[in-house]
Image 1 (spheres, rainbow, N blue to C red):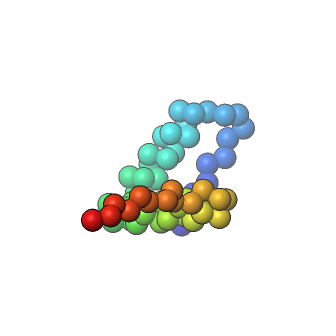
Image 2 (image 1 turned 90 degrees about the horizontal axis):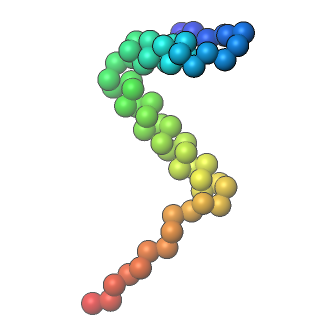
Length: 61
């Protein structure tokens, strides 16, 4: 179970420390899986919001 960082005021240093501790608690496989999952989520969001892949130019032979 992951923990939640709760701060009274913004503290970038503590946020970074918290994030690094979390990342170090994961295996390499878990980190890559999470990275690929987030990449797919971002690509889907772009398509949903009208930012589709640009058209491709097809060269005639």
